[in-house]
Image (cartoon, rainbow, N blue to C red; front, side):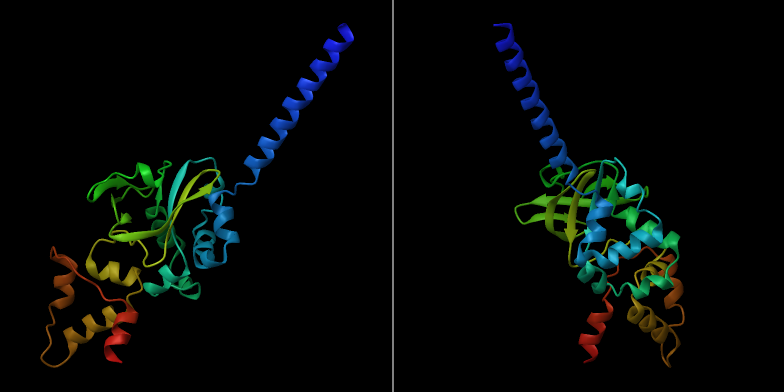
Length: 223
């Protein structure tokens, strides 16, 4: 009888051990945010940005974090490619990435309905989120794929735009967002015969809302 009990105990112990090891292996296979970004081809520009900003270690940490992750198409939509990152300082890149990061895990069902509910990011700035029947939106940009699992939080993919943090004024924001055609248009409108020399100062000081065309939008117009 004692032998039978010992055998049963050993069997139970081994079963629990196998289940624990299996669960641990399953948990270990879920990547961190940094690993997901660095191993996913459509996030190659984002991966380069993470490296330049020196945030790989942070995004590999325990978190939890929520990252609204622009893919390559999203960066291209505002004129930022991997090569264009070279013209930005590491501080500027870090500010952009932290503006996409919330220091808490927020899955899509936890996003405030809004409209435009204020959420503070890891940079200390604010983004505005909305959840409705059409999906989840952040600063007006629709999340293309929500709730991508990672071990230290959650990732929501953006494909149509990048969140640009406040840079002090409209002109600085346009430069930081690599809206080169818009910046050139403002310069031309200020310096051309019959133009308005006060336009740059107005855009730098007045309280305005600007619907800013991307480089691609200007190209489509001029074509």
